[in-house]
Length: 156
Image 1 (tube, one colour):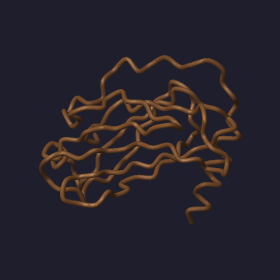
Image 2 (cartoon, rainbow, N blue to C red):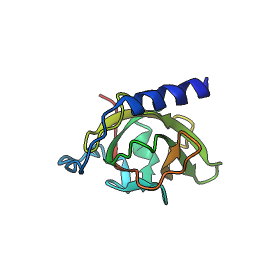
Image 3 (cartoon, rainbow, N blue to C red):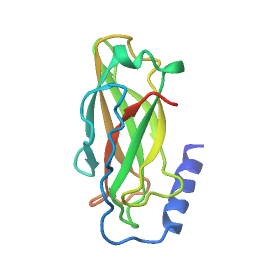
Image 4 (cartoon, rainbow, N blue to C red):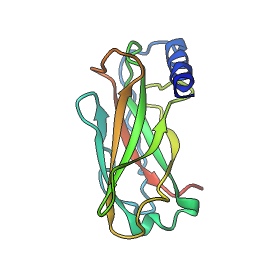
């Protein structure tokens, strides 16, 4: 199943036309619900994940423990297909993967897409560090691909 997802994401990304230049940054803040204590606008690249600090008491208001994360590709390199892994590290618990994300339609520089993440297994108070990491979808390493985390919100 995982292999099929990776192949589907890879096929979609390779079918997308290459784009030169960069997209414009998002003009709007997504964190109107006050879910993030820090990290809004953080970038993830090959060298380091984006780090966010989530207010778990505010996240406990999420219906069914689901939040939306908005991701904007800052640089898309056609030869660097990727997936996104979101992990959470909360005090008193193990680090957990709370989302695996594939862009569809394929990522385009400057075009924000929103994805659902499951925080229902995290404690209902305190804070958690979320890491948004790019994962290569092939054996080739990522070198230039980057994305920005616009923020988190309660789903509408």
